[in-house]
Image 1 (cartoon, rainbow, N blue to C red):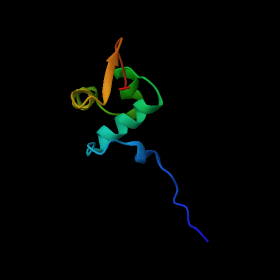
Image 2: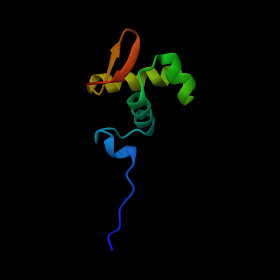
Image 3: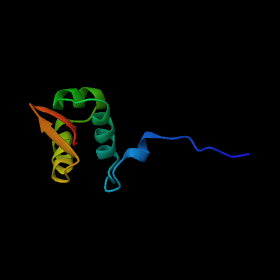
Image 4: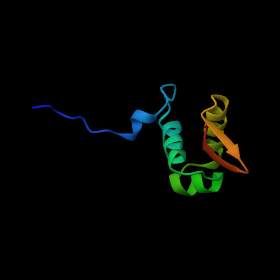
Length: 74
């Protein structure tokens, strides 16, 4: 009898993401593009924190900004 482990979305996270909030933002953006306001209301994270997280994600080329909205880089 084989045992199957449940699959989780965290398996799709880049290994360099260590911050729980960065992981949260990244997972949110995997489901849809979002503006900073949408991220704030959807995640309950302050804008100042989101700007810092998004800057780091963009520097690592994990997230890109398109027409004022953020999305996981392709």
